[in-house]
Length: 202
Image (cartoon, rainbow, N blue to C red; front, top):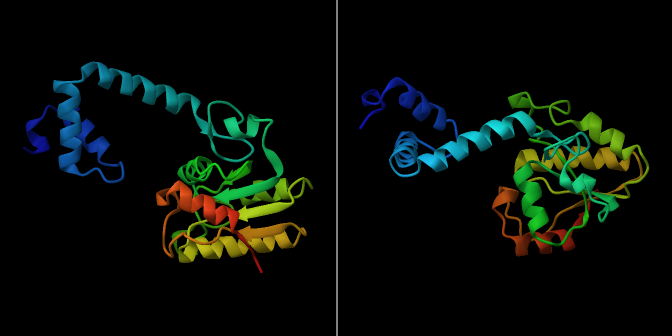
């Protein structure tokens, strides 16, 4: 089957689904046909949930994690250690670190990593907001949990220098995170060990 045999609105839905990572023409077709043939109520719920999320979910004003209001659930919590700030590349990386159970501090989400060739600089990563947090005088340790890629290492080095200029201890997550690996794919046990054995950034 090709999209041309479907009515225009269905064909548009097929095209829309293909922007998702890992979803090609055949996967999109299977999803759409399943929703319409077997799960119409599930499709309605999905449409409602997506519309509501797009209307209400926005970056947290403090850490840039996704939030329903001004602050995310972690920034609202009174049970976190405000002297530790863990910097991650994405909300999924934050969720991975949080699920390890080894960290009880606060977070900052970059939503990317430094990549001059792709036009991603400090402004795109919200580093002005991060600098303001570092200047508040509460943070004693900046934990750099960026991925073990060339861009992730360069980002960690940049952030480490930012911390050192303010006499804030900068550490890098340690063993078990494979070179070139994405943090969100690392299991919670490995992440827990990496956090516990983090090293000082020179």
